[in-house]
Length: 246
Length: 246
Figure 1 (cartoon, chains in turn yellow, brown):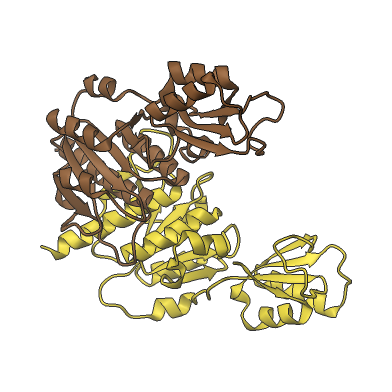
Figure 2 (spheres, chains in turn yellow, brown; figure 1 turned 90 degrees about the vertical axis):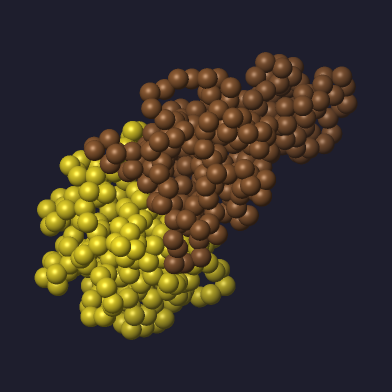
């Protein structure tokens, strides 16, 4: 189930101490303005957390807990810090997935599960235009959200710049790319694979920063994003296993 | 949306003329016994169609259409006949998927979509222990149910025997297999890939009839069945494209 924090003081404390774990702040349309409410709005905006002005009598909230017009939803696991992740050492190369605008919780959960199965090291999402880590994601991931570090950043573009400066290579999945996904060598680099939303694909800014663009051959419209992700992730696994076997 | 046929005469006619398209027959617990009802039950059983004795005031049925205690649900597309499919000629080899007990409509729809994208020739399911072709499958397949022939058979075991006699090879996906999925050559044979349900895998009878058993390397519990399916289907596509490119 989703976790919620009820009431001005509790939400304010969470926003001050662990803002990355807050996925959304709900404020009642009839909430009385006051200094604490003002500060909640400021902190939410500062941390790029979505604020929803809504009716708090929804079924998803507990009716018996006083909320003073403010409720926040909390991710079921902690997000991992990008800088900390980057500094970690590992034998061999590292491989991660960057999700650009993937907002469907089933796709998000399925991608996290596939990352766990294929031994990927992390999933990076943006504060905006991304799916919050909620109960649906947790369930679809079959518990894998507890095994794969999920990193939330303010800017995917800035994050990609940092990765490139740290000698990572950036691969973009794009239906219009020239090369097939199996035509690049995944075995001798740290790399990040960017996947876009099913509707609009990868944003131009990120696409322009990528070193490789790859496509999946497709006889019918397009693949589901979590399916395409699995095919590419396992192609990298195949190449690495084949190389290690000599 | 799901299609339904209402009333004894209409259901009886559908059972006589196109029984393969009927996925389920609902009979009211208070339906008056009569010859037509008896015949409906006989025909449903003869064609291995599930009969549900239930309350017909459910929201999924139209309240204003008289049903005389009998409603049948109809697949949104026609199933294709196995013998007809087998006799079709095609340049090059053919490849199909056999689903053994995959009952989740989202997985079924996702697999059909991936089959369309990767150019697979058909999906075979059994009358029993399979998911009916319903509105959820249609939606999850993104319309691909209109592009990939879906074949429903009474016995998967018998169907596999016929395929083997027609020089098809049978590949079973099994978490306990010795070989990785990329260690067999998909390029020079007609083959059928069997996938089992997430819970119980492939039934022993079918596993014993398979020529190859393959697994996916996995670092975390298990992959979703539609994800595993996509990885294997695209490995065969990769091998065929690489071979054709010389």
